[in-house]
Picture 1 (cartoon, one colour):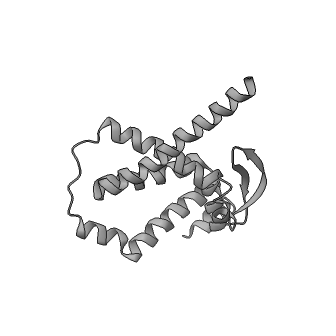
Picture 2 (tube, rainbow, N blue to C red):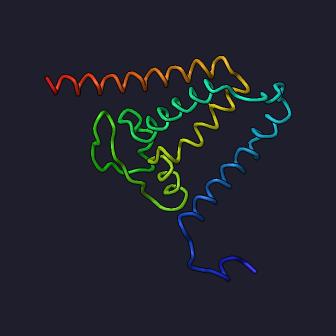
Length: 162
């Protein structure tokens, strides 16, 4: 019996997200990304990641997630899936997802740095296993950017107090 016959009108945001996640996995699998990765894996998984690796990935994940979800410069990437609401300070913009179905689900993902973080962290972690040197270099760029942001905010706050 089809699901529609059992519960014809129940479509929740969670069910849309699960469809999006399932579709993403299927697209990667169908494209051969996952089987090719499994077949060509030359690196064994590390026994453990260092605290420094976790800290590096954590800070870089925070920054890259915010850049994708909130930065004015990356708004063109979100534009097909979101609608601008207002500026939110320090080069960021508030946007809301728009559309229906997959477009809405992608929009919800793209405006939520917390939602993006799991995907970004996964990419950085896989990068540490597959290509540790370039991944650390790239992550270091985002960590330096984060430190710079905090220093810019502190500098501005100190100037306003004078």
